[in-house]
Length: 166
Image 1: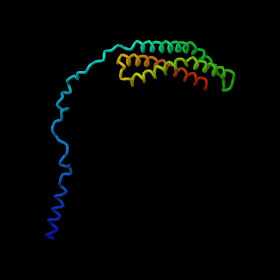
Image 2: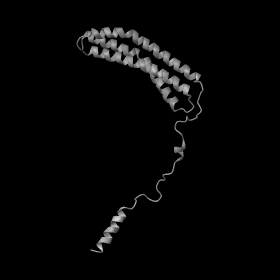
Image 3: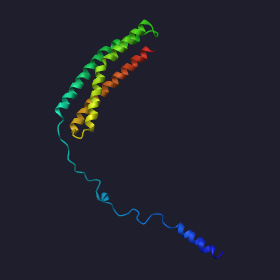
Image 4: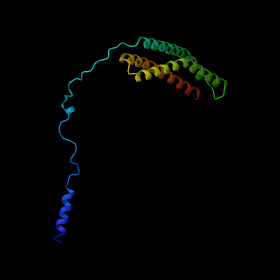
């Protein structure tokens, strides 16, 4: 029994030993902690103007998309009235409404082509380290405009499809 007490005491003391190796992390201040986070970080601002060729390409794509959007807006009322007059599936009026919807979607094709090309251009310029912030800003502004037009066109097509299938 007397021998069991020192052995159990030895086991208990080894359990209290630290498991962190002697080469553990230091608790000293790191250099990053010495920087005051309230101070502004000085960095060079890239003030290069946008690439003129890029701006020309963006303008051409926007013109193409806007022209297609105008054609879509002109064809939309006809498709809506055909959808409102659509009878049961496979009837003459239903077929006429489907044709009007197809024509409306056809007028949208140049828009989607221009939007896709702008998106490709945006992706390529985002990966290109030589692109200026002005280039990226011009692309983003054009994409935002086309995105808004695209959402409106999709909503119109969806509502016409729903009117035909009622």
